[in-house]
Length: 216
Image (cartoon, rainbow, N blue to C red; front, side, top):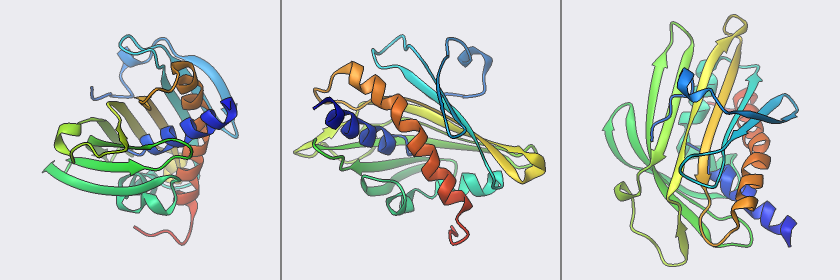
């Protein structure tokens, strides 16, 4: 039973991660992290949150692809259904500007009800420095109304930071997420699944970025 719930929660978290605004590189955000695991070159950390029993997660990895290509994968939300598991619906519902938009997603994890949410996403780009950032926070008021049989996610904030390494031939990807999958699922399971799901998520981004057949 526990293993089945963990599988379900991992599915929810993987999908929630696809793209309070968090600046992942600020010094004030760099305290309290505890190293959890390293899985095939993906280092995972966690820390307690002051406003939720669910812990915040951070992970870093390196990808043998240019940062512009990795960032393109993260921005290509309309095609998440092609390579991210459990996502069944994604669409942009509004824009404030070319760099700020609202993204609705619905996911269908195993064993439990569908989840959905709308995110306010913001991008920042510095091509000269080879640094790109995508941040998000929940903005359900901008998206569709609650559906019968679908659990509305209320907490989902995070960021991807993409940085140039190896003279531009490689990328350091830093990922952060604070989310609660909602429903009646125990918080200790949510914490464990959040941590366990991170390597699978970043591996999916890696595979997409190095796939020679992928073109945005």
